[in-house]
Length: 133
Image (cartoon, rainbow, N blue to C red; front, top):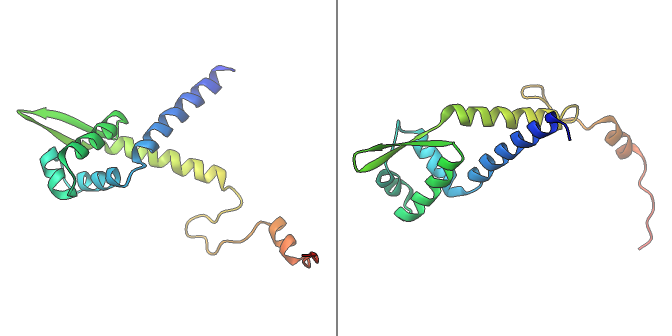
């Protein structure tokens, strides 16, 4: 394994951890709520999310560990904010990955209808073989 493989693997591990942190409906809801405000304390998020304080705190801990949310202590409570640069970077990586994976088979945004690759069209044009049941 060369250095490049190690770098790619480390980057993939980081992206996977961030995606795993997003892989829960409550955490997505909390992110949207944080995105709608400059910052929130847990009490604000509990009220808005309708979840128990311990549940909100646990989800925030996961988002903070993934560096998608940051917090700062403020007297007796902590204020949580979206880490917008980290989310934008993650969105960019996802976009690049999808562009790479779908090159040649998926329509690009704004370029009309999806068309099957030529191999698929050829297969569809051939008559179906008779199958015994």
